[in-house]
Image (cartoon, rainbow, N blue to C red; front, side, top):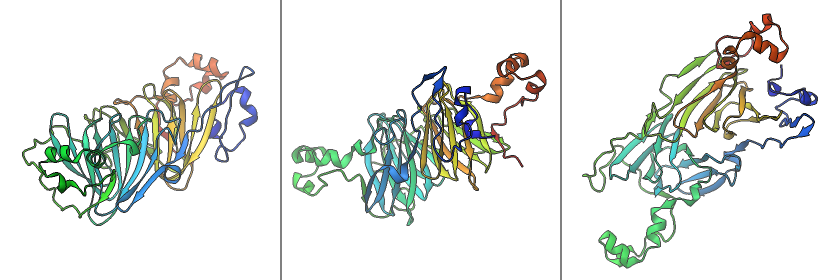
Length: 380
């Protein structure tokens, strides 16, 4: 069976034999009328993302300017070199989520009530900073670090944030001197434009005190150890870990997931009633098939560094097509996780009703699985 054309209409018979991995499959005819075809929903952030590079590190972005379909979520792949730091800044229109892919990172963050938190992150850890909270990021140790950032608005741009050097460098020296309790001439050589990613001394191994050690510690943890948590669900063909606001309370606008799909397996047909889905491929190869109503189906392949975006309510499945496990990092633009699986949906209806839908016999329908497999393993 060609999984790339699992969801098709009778009017699409001429396309069913195409190999979905060779090219996008678009089926857009219903009752003889043309429907608007589905948009492409893949983007390679590492290859095609808008980029910035400097001595301290680099960043590549996928916001709506680069990936128009992704209206609700933007992403940034950021790397910091030893001694590199993402300067003190805040985001006016989006919260920041991150997953550490390589190396170690130290963060500082301040909340509107004046509380502060300093945390250290390693591979598999995530952080979440609510919209408007001031923060900074530092590479720890003598090895580079790499992390994926997610923002809860596709209209966000990493290159349009509010950075401290940009602000102070464009402030009258006399005013700034009074603000910082320094003579104006002492500030003559501060940066005159945004540093964005800068370089400094290697941070000390132990977290140092803040400039004002009396600043109260935050009562809301910004850190969650995602990779080391046990799977939320284990299936014959892989697993999924779900981190919603229930598990990570400060993560109030997003839900995160880690999913592994073994070679030849696929994430069964399903949809999410309450959220868009944004996927990042950490490793392996696969393809996604989306159903958008009116006979519209499209399948597109992806691999490491690629992003897939699935609109809220669109039916879809994910296949692992390579020889290695497909490893996915997923964001949903909601603090609570919801899904409806095809197996569960069919099993919740009378057998005769299901049989009448598809022209099958009761004996055939009674062979349908009664419980969802979640991720269906490859046939041996």
